[in-house]
Amino acid sequence: HAFQYNDILALLSLDRCRDSEAWHPCVVADVSDAGARATADLAGPNATPVYCDVASSASQEAAFADHIRRNGGLDIAVLNAGIPERGDLLSAQDDSWRPTLDIDLGAVLDGIRLASQAMAPAGGRREGRQGVLITVASAGGFFSMPFSPVYAAAKAGVVHATRSVAKPLLERNIRICALCPEFVDTPLVAEARAQSGPQSPFYRATAGTLLTADKVAEAAHVLITDPNRVGQCLVLRMTGEWMEAVPPSQTLQYIPRPATSTSPIVPAWREWATQGLAGGRTTRTVMIRRLSNDFRAATRLETRPVPAPGPGQVLLRTVYAGINASDINYTSGKYHASTAAAEAQLPFPSGFEAVSVVAEVGPGVKHPRPGQAVATMVSGSFSDYTLVPARACLDVPGPSPEYVALLTSGLTASIGLQECGRLRKGETVLITAAAGGAGQFAVQLAKLAGCHVIATVGSEDKARLIRSLGADRAVNYRTEDLKAVLRAEYPRGVDVVWESVGGEWFGTCLNALAQKGRLIVIGAMSQYKGPDGWKPMPHRGLPEKVLNKSTTVTGFLLLHYTHEFRRHLALLISLYSAGKLKIILDSPEHVGIKAVPAAVDRLQSGQSSGKVYVRISEDPLPPVGAKL
Image 1 (cartoon, one colour):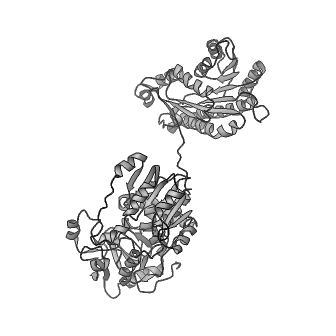
Image 2 (cartoon, one colour):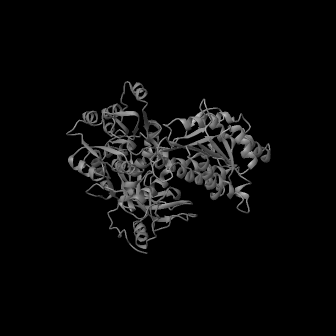
Image 3 (tube, one colour):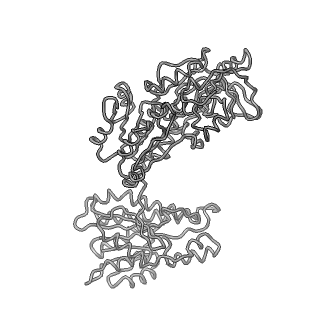
């Protein structure tokens, strides 16, 4: 018992559903009596034509009732309501576009409702053989159609509705699938081509070999007869290829609405920012005098003049500067094009992240304004004052050390996991050096993505800390063998590794990857302090290991993603403001620019937990919450 309406294409699938002895009885419903009769003649002796205006729920309901009255039940329904788009949506002066949406989507939804009720009249589980519903959508439900946006929107709605009702319908012993062909050689397409003209995008899109009705019928037959196809959306390309449209497995991550992160103009902070210039326009700066991975040996505290800001520039007084593992890579010239290039620039300032307050602005600068707090990620943050382009300033709510933690550390975790990790819900993620500045955020962001997180730490205190941030398994590498833990507890392997240690750990992490796993290299901290500096490590068999498991090894250097800084910083601030992200600061606080070397030593010792930072000024600070 079959029911279908509106197009001969759907009927051709019924031709393939007949057995060797007899045709299935079916009803052909169409808004045109003549069309319904002609189609019924093609569909065989047991096909009955009936009138149905699919735009009317009452008309559809009457057609379904007519079918039940004639045949006693409904086993298969092919819902093929559809009309082409009329006119140009963006130029329309009325709602002439609406019938396309009402018929191509609304009528199909009505059909799904009425067909399912006819197949399981009491609204419960259908008895006997399984019912089958086929919605005829379009490849336009997946690919953009600039020349038919309303049609594409309607067909996308049919696809999503098909997927959405697949499970509840299956519980009622009814299967539903969607047939999504590209352009088919039908009178409907021919009419649209004639109306659009040879120069139109639609005409050009349909200039190739169109699908034949037989090819569409063949695909419909497969969807109808294969009991394993539930909620499947089958795309038929004009090339003859069949493609299953699978929803992306990437789960939505919690991203709150970005809050206003611009700092207010606070007179108390504006006064503080300029009072440091009262004794003369000079600044103390930690300058790199020679290349070395020994920070103390490489740097010297110097006093330098402070020029007035020029056009497009702002003068900042540094409040807090961040300490990073890569500070000693910077002092050894590793971030220059070559050692020779680094030596040619000596001396140059050190430090590359800070939260500051605007002291002065140059001509033409409208934002930021004096008295506002900003963040920067430019060379020279280990200074009392820095002169930077206004465009380099990032908005933060206030001059707090927490926002320093969100710069290099937070952005590395946020951008790195998104761009290279491509986390999916349910995956297993290994975070090395998890209690560090970036590691703490990597753990929390992976948990927000719905992942199982393994975190490596160097003490029981750090293990407790990282568990409080959500880690599922903390591995203290001083008391446990990481390789043995991974082999025993995660025999399938891990899906993503966040690797910042380097050395032998890289090999352990690489070997622990599951099939199609991703290893993100964000650093090699264990190699930075060697007597010869950061030397490359040999990793024999790397290509073969990557090939055998279809894994990827990706490097991530934050400076290559500067275009993402503002967006990700705003999102991190929103997560923090909403209580979804914790920020761990190392203690004790280092105070004064002379404390920078000690802070670098603290981080390199491995004893720190959370973000290491320095309060650059020894002067008392106004309260962060100072009002206008």
